[in-house]
Image 1 (cartoon, helix red, strand yellow):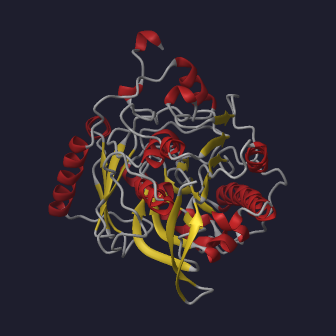
Image 2 (cartoon, helix red, strand yellow; image 1 turned 180 degrees about the vertical axis):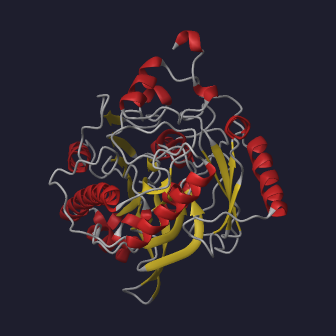
Length: 468
């Protein structure tokens, strides 16, 4: 069996560096759908929503400023799982991109995936390189995180060669909408009066610019009580995911493989929890507080793209928190480095434990309605698609994240906006997909609609009107 030399970083328990030869590490790659970083206690949420993730983080390294490259699942996951950039929010694994599981399979690993999000299916290439690929086939998200973990452990136990290293991708969907925690609301009232006041002020400003606003700028205490309940349900689902994570770590320890397993916990994107005005060109569902944005996929603000990222296991510094800004495409080269896998083609991202943390490129993100770029870990520009600017008069928005981390007050700086617009245009051209993975078929479109998606799909990925 091929062996690789892993350099263990500054482990808290050792107080220095240790070097030892180990078997090729297993990898458990956990992508919790729709988990935004700031609703975890690991990232400072005052509710204890993730005690098991906290414990895992204490054994490993937390990246405090990690970002998805899209705000909805398909384009985000395609970049996360390949480490490749594409400037169109294409939903599939592109033909010329390499799924990370393919690298592990070629290196002699057993590979498997248990995926509770039915849109991450084989038709779009998400099963490439995976020997045992199990996906929820229903047009709804019916598997709880505990079921995903249970199925993953069954596969680990059922492998023919228990000595062979494995790569296991687990994709639970707690806390994706609808928020229906199995045990009901877990937490009591939380004082989020600051968020309430900010939402009130933002709605008032929006009403001045948009006289047809449904609330006319009003957001009373009854409205906010409804919002608070929604946020509580979301946090409760985060807690249920964390319970499943704790069960997984405990089960790996019982099986004697925890110390030889790298565990990665991240998310595909965040979630809007009604703290921001909705898009002017978005129709509002009748069952929600009008004019406040809930869910994901149509914006690229921090709550939509900032995600947790925790590594633990062989080769990972213990008890560390890293402050540099990283993104999804950095995960694949990092795992290649930790597991000593050969790189088959140049990768867009950077191995996070091997690169000077001060040398970080601008961060880009895409969705069907806009693009964004963040430079100097401070300035973020949201650039609307041209049809939105022409049809709805929506203009670019520039934010100073140091002074305004919640992106509430746009900055009037035409020179900087022009410079950053040029950055986005150049990036779009440099990373335009050479060949698309193909237009979505009607079955996938139906599944997306059943899950509440609609305008997230870019027009180039839709079949002709006559075929829909």
